[in-house]
Length: 248
Image 1 (cartoon, rainbow, N blue to C red):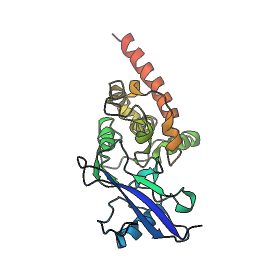
Image 2: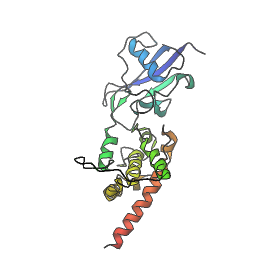
Image 3: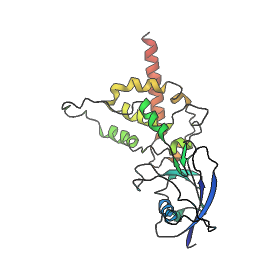
Image 4: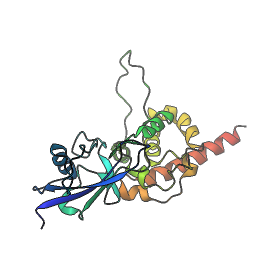
């Protein structure tokens, strides 16, 4: 096994700048992940050819696959850099920014579109915190377990990166916001705003734009059953639409 880890990184000053590739070599360490390798480059930003360059820019926070900040393309697959161990990756390790989000610089992208989508679908439970609301509603253990799977979403963006329907020609908001609708609609308190969420999903950004490629469940780091959420929402929207027609 080689003593060094070879990384080939796609670099870009900003969204409109021309991209370039730079190759780096860093000493291999036990249990080294991609973030550790990037930190080694940051200490001494010199390419494998001996040319001094600027430190590579990326994002990270928790370093334990919880925050979703370090999402990038690693050997052409969207995943978390903190959980990608270099010993398990083919070299040279190719690092690129995700393509479905605007590039801020190098491997750092702007994931604002996901957070804006969460606002549109009201992915929260509005409460009046001015007085004691008492104990919340009881859920069965089966319902708790089902909803817990969706609550593990860390808005990393991997599902949007893998989804062919998320592109510049489609307004589709992507699988992650849809799963959050399933989460909050499935909660007894959150269900109070169920109609508002479903109305958004009945629009062009919503569920009709899903092509059922199922790539999202293949790349989700948390193994969230995203296709189950989409199927559930399909049923909710059909019932909601049918009842709306009957009320006319």
